[in-house]
Image (tube, each protein chain N blue to C red):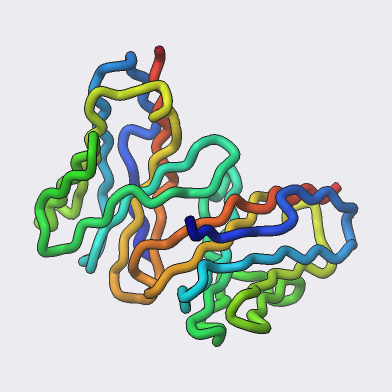
Length: 110
Length: 113
């Protein structure tokens, strides 16, 4: 089944810097979503971008989608220690489920 | 603030014992998912329900796992008999449509000795 793949798989940055992570997928999609998971917790939905959208913002988050390249990026601006988490992309390709990637570990150093 | 709840949060059991995990989806959500997360395999979809009917349980080992939704407020995942390789965190999630936003519970951390 299709699965998003996040890149880089691990990222360490200083507080205040921007963090960018990418997700690639293989087949056409209806939407792509980003989730955050703090250690020991469930996943939390961050943002959903539909296939006919190219960019979306939510607070300090900016998501882009390039369907021609089958890729998406998540930008976290002015990172904070609380942004330390794993970030997952998930794709809906119309088969009534989301396909999750393996996640991207982000560490923000205070 | 509506949330998905799961019980128990932690479970330690011995190999061969039955394990039952429970999930209360967000009121009004008609789609419920069960996932398993391990370091090696990542997040795996085990089964999901739409309007309480099982739509897909192909991700579950059928001989030992079973998932049910006896009413709209309760979903259960049972393992019988449990094995050490079942040790993982099990998440329940709910939503309005399988391909839209999913709301995850806090998970049940299962350890099978």
